Length: 160
Image 1 (cartoon, rainbow, N blue to C red):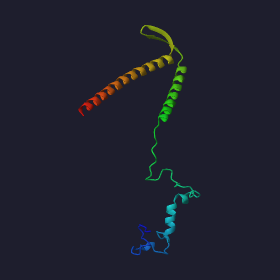
Image 2: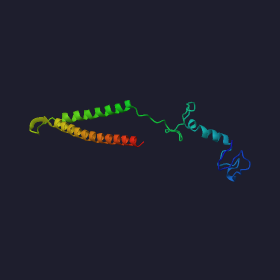
Image 3: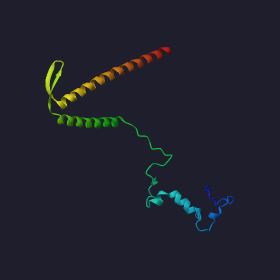
Image 4: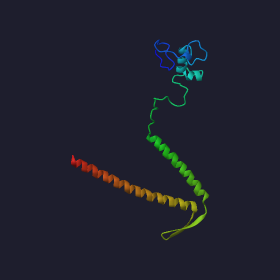
């Protein structure tokens, strides 16, 4: 077992020791016996946190060890559905609060139709109408892209 410390290697007789780290000198840079220092460095977390040496894999650090990657988390359909439902519930609760706080009646006219509707409900209907228009525009674009992809597949199939 060889050490590669800058202060010399007590196992290797060819490596000279600096004068300040000579054995028996007070205030030496290295310990007199390198074995306890190596043992303390290897235990690390057990020395800092007594009683944790018996826990396999515990290193005392909050983050994972360098060089070890955490396994990637898989995104599942169930997880996506759960996130979508939770988000939708939050939005619905906010909409209910908005509608309940805006109960004043307003006069609404649309293509010759007239009526009195609460302010919150009329704004909600307008928002849903805008969402429907955006969804229709998005559907038209998706249909265009799918048709173009189909034409490309057919064209590449003929060229083979």
